[in-house]
Length: 613
Image 1 (spheres, rainbow, N blue to C red):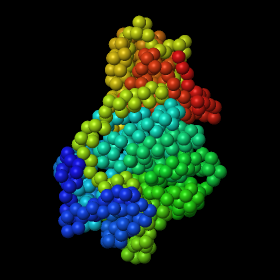
Image 2 (image 1 turned 45 degrees about the vertical axis):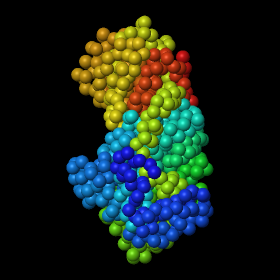
Image 3 (image 1 turned 120 degrees about the vertical axis):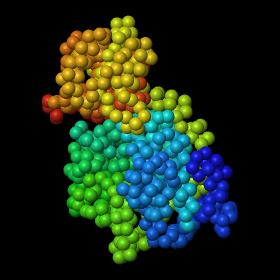
Image 4 (image 1 turned 90 degrees about the vertical axis):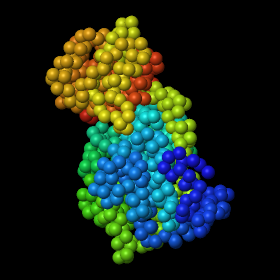
């Protein structure tokens, strides 16, 4: 038996009451009968034991299996008092264990802001505590634990776990092998911590530079290139034993509205949807993706009823299930987002989502309201129990595929030998080196020379780390350049530098031989643009690094050298530093068009553009 090492130690050997089964041929399963563990064999293809488990569930237990909920705290049973207070305020329970006991939830999602992901061993302990709390209940079923570990700008688990470049950086690298390796390594680390469903990869094709919510989370603007990388990453994750999730169906790439705060409308015709949005989802399905996440947006060409796709039967059942032939798990995006709440109340949204064809209901804002609404819909006949059974069977099949019935717990030793180990970190660095894109290099300014440019000033935006464990970017860049033989000084100027901040940066540039400036979503009126212009006017060589969107370069005509890093995470900044120092060649190619700032229809740098030394 495995030693969990943290919460749940020893409970892999003698759970109090649970049923464990598997859908894998020839695998020994354990069932608890009268408190004594007995062995048995389950054969593939029948699904009889899964259906038998469903038949023994009460209606309340069935409803619970459909929900994936957040919960605050680093521990399943003993969260900090502040997290207890947050749980009571938002969910009506004190802890994850109480959440499971009350609602019998089938899944739990981890967030850094919910204090679920402090460090790998703590995460593993929380996972074990959650499984123990569920498996000790009557008809106990293992919990499918999930998170959003996209890498790049969205990462819930930080260092010392391995952090990779994000999707658009991978798109710039154009390597299916790298995408597959990312999924395989990241999946191994998540599984070692007890997380077996990752809400990644993003399958949206980002054809709108003004997209406020997808952007660099997408592999790019070329549907076929995105499709190839999505399929590769899906394969990598699932070979590691973690369920991948292609999102956000039917496609969130062409919008200028954030579905977290508004209700986007995609105006693509059906032909445009088939050509632009559908290919990555088709590729993900062909690659066997275990789950697909819905989008809270309207596509009138696919369903003109005015409902978000999450609540659209023509989209989820008619297109996803019937036309694309997908029979895996469909999970909603968070039900707390504005895009799904603008038309219906929180009591109607989960019911309508199930009627549309959804299986998992993710993170409703008021779980009591949502859970009771689904229960009442069945009791009133609006939903049938058979409809719930269809979704529960898909969910249980996925849990069986992921070995949750056989191996619900993880071990401390497994974390130590898997998470953030040297070979994984080295792989992330190698992948990052293939993504940095050189867009401007006047008079061959780059690479900088330690002889001619020994003293560097690093200034610019310092956005918060996506995982809370990296950065700030100016310091990371300065440290990396210093390790490469320069003397680099960091000075944060922020995303909206004031006139006084700009003056101090310009004064500091007088003591430097060259300036490296990190930019973050520059606009025509941004004071970041003024900062770069003022620094360039000093006569000192200036190298700009776009820390997020590569579109920044269109607003920086005065800069003699510009790189796109696609994110401000440490691994990408270290790679950019090696490019600046000439230790590696810039190999990345733009995965999106960059249009002129003064003429949005004219392409300044097309897909595939990228300079080398």
